[in-house]
Amino acid sequence: MHRKRLLQKHHALTRRVFASASLGVFAGLLIPGARVFASTDSRSAAALLDPRQQILMMRHADAPGYSDPPEMRLDDCATQRNLGERGRQQAAETGHWLRAQGLQQVQLWSSPWCRCVDTARLLGFGEPHRKDFLGSFFRDPELASKHTRQLTQALQLWFSSAPTGPLILVTHQVNLSAYSARSAASGELFRIRVAATGQAQQVESLRT
Image 1 (cartoon, one colour):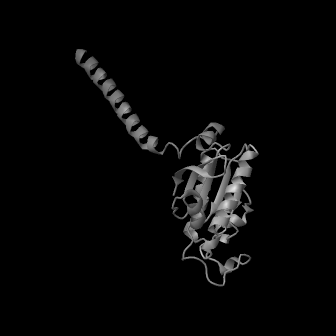
Image 2: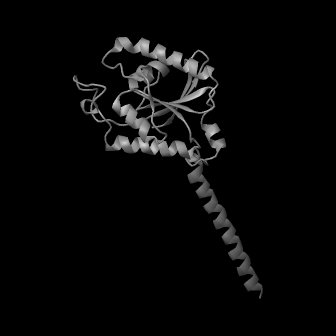
Image 3: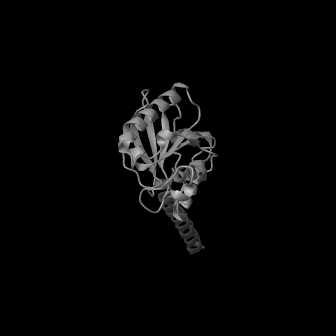
């Protein structure tokens, strides 16, 4: 009888130790990625972005090739460098990730280049507003200061209206770098705190 009680205590202790160890391993797996698995309520959206002083800015998703052909035209996607299959999947996955953070209704601004418009559409928040100042100046570097100034002015105006919803911008490496002083990989997403003047104040990479 005594031996039976000892065995029962041993089995109970073993179960508690195993449960604690399993919980520790499980927590260790989830905690580093907690931001990715956040709930979809408004609190998680607020944790991702304060729409009164922050924006999300994204370089277009993966588009094979380098620059655009000399004969490219904005009104003809066939003449431009476009998203590949990997880029289309990358953009869609970023949209899923954003919704998992709680974002539902957003304002979308995009470069008029097809690879940016397609990236914005694939995020799944509707049709983007095309903004010329988000267009690439890779082949026309003299436009850099003009486009960056217009972007800064547009953001100053945006925040002066006391927005209540998130703003996402989809643009090119050169534009993002000129505005934020950060280099961006294809499809990389940044959270940017914007000063009252419309200038980038704090830049943080969220997703590549």
